[in-house]
Amino acid sequence: MQRIGILTAGGDCPGLNAVIRGVVAGATQRHGAEVVGILDGWDGLMVGRVRRLDRNAVRGILQRGGTILGTSRRDPYVHGDGAASLRGTLAREWIDSLVVVGGDGTLRTALRLSGEGIPIIGVPKTIDNDIAGTDVTFGFDTAVQIATEAIDRITTTAESHDRVMVVEVMGRTRGWIATYAGIAAGADAILVPEEPYDLDAVAELLAARAAHGRHYSVVVVAEGIAPPPGTHVKPSVDVFGFERLGGVSAVVAAELEKRTGFEARVTVLGHIQRGGTPSAADRVLGSRLGVAAADLAAAGGSGRMVALRGTQIVDVSLEEACAELRGVPPAILDVARTLSAP
Ligand code: F6P
Image (cartoon, rainbow, N blue to C red; front, side):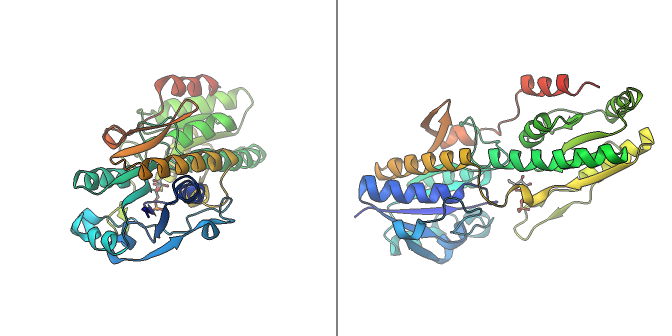
């Protein structure tokens, strides 16, 4: 009987459990295959931590946040001997094919491993929505919803106190969450890594709002923007050497206060954007991707990633998915600018 292994790696993301359930349902119902869950990302594969996943094991997980398999940022090429560090577990567990659910770093590792002869199918995952080859990643919809609700709440207190509120959302290299949540919540300025920003221009905009009687403003900042010129944010890395972001909003707020004289406050939304129950859209997308990944794995595919194009689930090469990070198109950034005129 064919055996498919599945692991979730990198930062967690709402909808991961829908993918796991989709893979198990697809593998067992459509292909009579067995599924082995690998615990804690690549780590579990390196040290042989696994658990059998049958239909009962994935009941009731669809609406749960996080991942029942656990995850980590350990990488076999950085923290082990690459493919060699995984082959023992693959052989011992009779795993014929791997489904790997992850973001850009995980998918690059998957591409390398498939080049070394390990059959791998990728599933794109990140709240950052920055994976190429797919129109959207699951988790993004939930994160935007959470960020929008938060900005809505922040807006009412901003208005009561005549304050400038700077809200920092996730987005390491791309500003999808900032742009979408900013548009959805009617933010007055949105700063993203995709394009340079001018704090003098933002300050002028806030002053123009005040001149029109709107003495409060909300500025949404993606965590990955460069600090304003002449300032810096203390760098830090996690135990895996992964750069920790967060904190640029404090510098932006201080600079805006300096330029406008308006009182500014900061909210960093952080991991609240990644936790908790996935939206219906993310549950559906994760489920569809999971079933499609099981189909590809059962058919003996490798080096491919399941993806959403329009309304269809397709598969693309891992090369295409890893070639670049997908940014917010200029036309959408332009709409955001148009909407935030004072
Ligand atoms: O890649 C997804 C993401 O949520 C980024 O937006 C964020 O910078 C990063 O993960 C945070 O990672 P960690 O949970 O390791 O702090």
